Length: 329
Image (cartoon, rainbow, N blue to C red; front, side):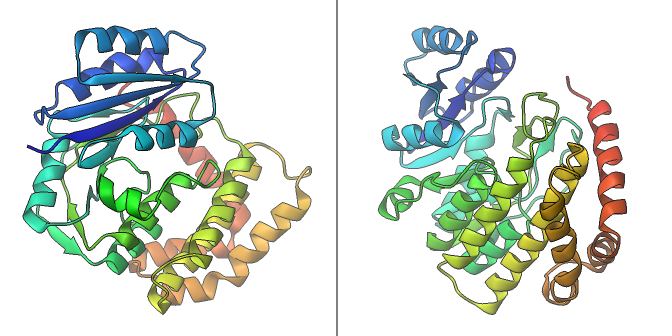
């Protein structure tokens, strides 16, 4: 049973920490190195981590000055000694067989990286009916993450530590889109990637401190910068990977437009608003033709590209309704 390093950046997460840490220490895969990186949290998160460490020798608490989630994850990556690495966000939690399931994917396929294509959220608590194991090439995995056919965060995945270290894969991009960079890099450097369908990761959508509910325009700007950087510096330079990147750039212009509307900053950011609308329309034909997405998705893309302002207003209302409908508080 190889040792697995679980890295969790912790910041202002005291109301979520017990659920998170309990889900880690009670994993069915018991050979764990648990790295809780307290990122200068001003609440009681650090002391909660220390209390757990006093009860479980597998837990190491790293206290540091606040530097953001990317820096905290990198500190964990530098300290990790396990053969494989799993990354968990501080407000989420794991199914108890999460690590065991990911290692099953690794053992069945010999992959450097494994992931699931679905996750639980606070709005979706239904498990998949059928599961299977697929083996994707590095190109398949890159495109699957970029479109995304796979949740794009660094969580719900497992990585061979040696592969990450040898290729210097870290969280080296600005916040918002940094997980996309990390996972797409890991996918490209992996020998191949194992993919399962079971939901083993729980993603919290109702944290009022997260970027999903606390909208900031810089998130969209950084995300656009990051996907352009991913495209320019990708390792697998094929038309297929370029088309995937082109689609995600188009998607990010829509995200920027949505954030401008959500934060009521249209007048303040007229130039960026015009840039977003213009690119959504100009790029529409190419991304509809070349993207590896179904017909229903492409029809929605056409509406979004032809009527971007109406789409953004409608999507904002949809997101507000969805937040109210969260099933787990």
